[in-house]
Amino acid sequence: MEQMQFGITFDYLCPFARNANEAVLNGFADGRDWEPTFHAFSLAQVHTADDEPDVWDQPSGKSGVLALQWGLAVRDNYPDYFPDVHRALFAVRHDHGRDLNDEFVIREAVSSAGADADAVAGLVASGAPMEAVAADHVECVVGWQVFGVPTFIVEDQAIFVRLMSRGVADDVQRVLDLAAWTDLNEFKRATIPR
Image (cartoon, rainbow, N blue to C red; front, side):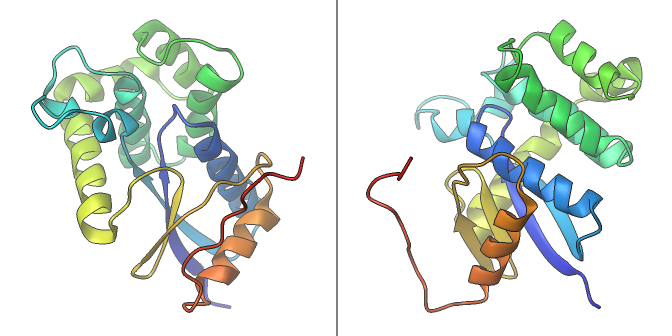
């Protein structure tokens, strides 16, 4: 059976991105026939005024950008550690309520996932992960008109989705199945039945 290739955007700031990204990780770990690609998308950049520099050009950085750099450093250089680091960086904010701009906090998360925090810090200091954040974000915006997270990218389609449950792989499969239905443009509940 051929694996389903798709992308998914993330920013560690967003709880809905966490729900969907964990669902993808869970499904992949359970042996689903998926071949996901994870794309960083900066919510801070989306909320940057036109007269301000891009978040990747600001020395002090904005919320969430440092965590994206660490995540991409691991994704691009230590892919075997990426699933655990990805989960740990989401947990920094959403489980522990800690600051994604605090390098010490991020180092702890990366180390807790088994990766070498010093090696990853060296990569971040090189500037390459910040370039990767910019490249991922711009590719998402220009290539697929992405405007938020999580967005699933299936072939040439971008589908913004908010999954209410955390980490449910079957929910991702439903999204992937609906992506094949190209006559559906928008499906949005007026209220959440909870």
